[in-house]
Amino acid sequence: MESKGHFEFQEMAARLKGEAALLTGDGLLAAEARTEEAEARLCLTWHAVAETAREIRQLYGVAG
Image (tube, rainbow, N blue to C red; front, side, top):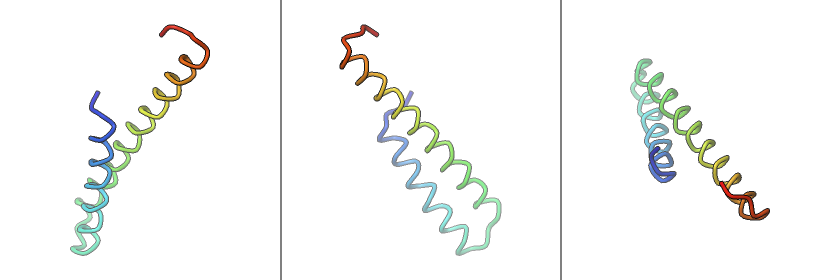
């Protein structure tokens, strides 16, 4: 899976695409932006869960 930074950039780019869609009135572009932003947020959530699990394993000395 790509790095957390990759998805942070993807989320930012999707927001900019959404703003461009609002300015131009392009509904298809707006839909793409919403989809890309949702995908980025989902992947960032996955990274947060994985990091939390790593911290818990480290805290309790569990291999994993």
